[in-house]
Length: 337
Ligand SMILES: C[S@@+](CC[C@H](N)C(=O)[O-])C[C@H]1O[C@@H](n2cnc3c(N)ncnc32)[C@H](O)[C@@H]1O
Image (cartoon, rainbow, N blue to C red):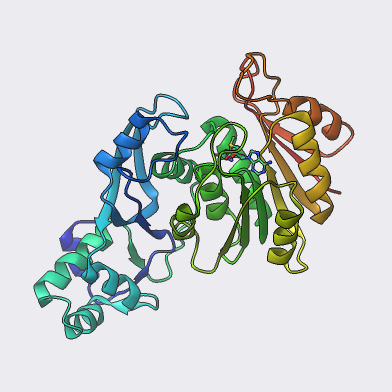
C-alpha cells in the first residue's frame, strides 16, 4: 500500500499483525556448528542483527537445496526504539493519530518521524488493519523457516505436512530433534496460537547438529505471543529428559509428536515407545526420513524406514514423499486411534 493509501486509511485502527516477529541473531558469531560457512555468511550478509519481520513476507529467491539458503531477500524493519514503541502501542487497535500521539508523547521522535516509521511498518505488513483475517500461508512460513533459521526438510513434503497439522490445530507439540530450529518454526506457525511447544534436542547428537542454550531466546521469538516454548537439551532417552517433558506437559497429552532425533532403528523405536503413550487419542505422531536410506552415511545410521514400515502397517497413516527414488527424506504421520 502506498503512503497515499495509508493516509486515506489514517482514521482506521491498526494493530500489530499476528505474523509480526522479532529477530535478533548475529550470524557472524552464532553459526550452528553443522551449518556451512556459506549458509551462515549469506544470512550474515543480508540480515541486520536485530529486526522485525512478517512471517509470511520473507522472500527466498532461487533456493539451491534444502540445506543451502540460495539467494535471500528479507523485508524487515530494523528494531529501533521507535519501532518497538509503535508495535507495543498497537497490541490493541489504534488509529494512526493515536499511535503518533502516544509514541511522540513518549519522546520517541518527531511527529513526522513517527508517522514515517508507522507508514514503513504498515508497508511491511507489521501493522495490519484491525479485524483483518490474516490467514496462514504454509508455503510462505516454510520459506521463512528456511531463510531465517535453516532446516533439513523439503518444501514438497513439509508444506502438506504443515497443512495437515494446521487442520488439527495442536495445542501441545513435542519435537524430538530440533537442530537449527526450522521445523520448530513451522510447527509454531500452524499450531494453536496458545499452544505449548516442547523441543528436545541433544547438542552435538548423532548427525552433528543440535542447538545451544543461547539459541533458546531466538526460538521463542518466532512463536505467537500466547505460545509457550520449553526447550530441553539432552538425550530423549535420558530419564531426566523424560521427566522434564512430563513436567512441561503438566498432565496434558501430546497432540503432535514429531520424531526426528536419533535416526537409528533402536533410537526411533525408543522415542516412539517412550513418548507415543502420551499422545492424545486421535493425535498425530510424525516421523522424518521414512524412505529407505540407499546412500550410506558414515556419520549416522538412518533406519527410520524400517521402523516406519512396522509401525504404520494397519494404522491410519499418511505419507508425504517428494521423490520416491530419493535416498532418505519423506514425512510420515500416524494417527493414534
Ligand atoms: C535431523 S536433525 C533435526 C532436524 C530438524 N527437525 C529440522 O527439520 O530442521 C536431528 C537432531 O536430533 C538431535 N538428536 C540426535 N539424537 C538425539 C537424542 N538421542 N535425543 C535428542 N536429540 C537427538 C541431533 O542433535 C539433531 O539436532
